[in-house]
Amino acid sequence: MFQRFANPNRFMRLTGAILPWSTGLAALLLAVGLYLGLFVAPPDYQQGESVRIMFVHVPSAWMALFVYTMMAGASAVGLIWKHPVADLTAKASAPVGAAFTFIALVSGSLWGQPMWGTWWVWDARLTSVLVLFFLYLGYMALWQAFEDPERAGKAAAILALVGFVNVPIIKFSVEWWNTLHQPASVVRMGGPSIHPSILVPLLLMSLGFTFFYLSVVIVRAQREIMARKIRSLRLLQVEREHAG
Image 1 (cartoon, rainbow, N blue to C red):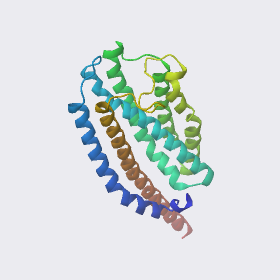
Image 2 (cartoon, rainbow, N blue to C red):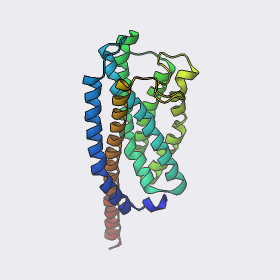
Image 3 (cartoon, rainbow, N blue to C red):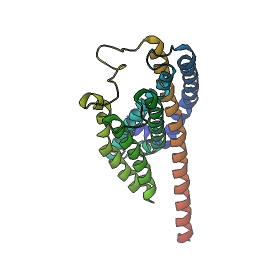
């Protein structure tokens, strides 16, 4: 199955068909989610109107973990099966994941200041998310540190896999340590503990962010494939000039 999509031309055709749908769904879900979250969902009895930051903060935090998980999976496929498109997909995902992580950190600070009385605390959840942001930056830096794309991809893939240990730390930090963050209230054994008026726009925003990520990664991966084709053609031209 992996080898079927290792062909860049097949990948381009498939993603070209998916892109209009993913972009349309992203726009629709985000528009409806923002409307429900900002104008329909009631203010919290404790947090007041500041609770609306949650509709950006929580999906961004979820996406920060989801994108890194996708990167680690794609990196493993690239290392084990030498799948060229997997490496490019992981590379294309990194800036998007870094952006989601940055939004989660900033929106969390904006939400935390009125609720906790501080912009930042060095608790387990916040610190591990900051480490995740630096992992994204380190991954992108490794791709730029090597002139050979194969060496760069291998080094970046190793970092992505080693750094994946931070994902479960972030997920379970509120259960393993005493933090200011509350335990999981959506994905839990007893079902969500959030009222539907809050849960529905929260899930719509999360789905919207997911399709937005898919659209951006498709565009970035297509650009990477085209850039590699151009690079190969230029190298071939140089070899022919030297041979002649």
